[in-house]
Image (cartoon, rainbow, N blue to C red; front, side):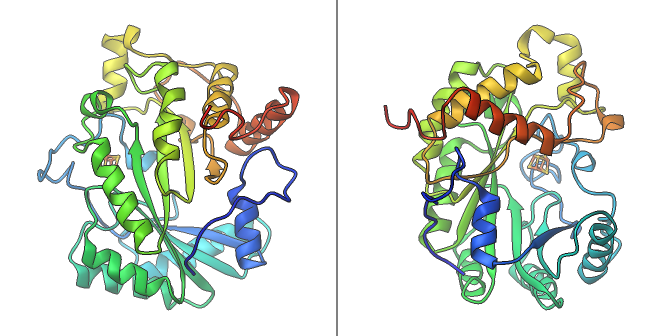
Length: 318
Ligand code: SF4
């Protein structure tokens, strides 16, 4: 399942919808099931550092049904049961290797984990969340091979295009590393996703809006944008307490304006999957309470595009 992603010009949406692409690609409802395969990350195990990115607490975004003491098969079973109770019944799934850095292991272990997921009945593919500096040609060759028969997307945490900001948040890689990883992945015919965080300390709204050009220049298939959320126990929550002036904690209205301004400058070929994150409220140490779920925020985004009579790519390359 490889190939070019093309902008759905027949769609009446004002942005390039990942959900629509999925419907076209699979022709049926496909549910993502998250997996915590027990990986760590080089920014935590001492290889690059031990403290991790300053905003990171993986517990804040991994669903409760994922525990790495269960096998991949066990987690898929549990994830399917979880989704069946809450949402419309889906018969097909994507295994989402979500927790920590999901290419950070020897090839044999990675192959065993991915193959286990792909052999589960109804699993049509894998989504692999990772860092741009944790991929190599052998892995990509293997993923390219898998993607002949399955849906495969590698999602890279890029977070910012600004190296000063990446240094400040202790990412342990620069933007050039993201450019290399995304380019090599796409060249192998594998779908690529990126994750960005808006609101990192020191990054201005103008810089974020301008970064749409650098992101658009990458051969990405899709994009997830999240607002910065201050999570309890993280160095960033501590930094906010001691230096609140470094932070621009947007109101929901300001955030939506920022996302719209960014999307107006974004290539229309890039699909938008998410525009906000949702850590459990009990884990947050954040003075804001937007009091909205991610799906509600997405609907506000769509309504604002409409009321402003604007769209993704309106100012692209202008
Ligand atoms: S955000 Fe990702 S790369 Fe950074 S410390 Fe957490 S798991 Fe590691």
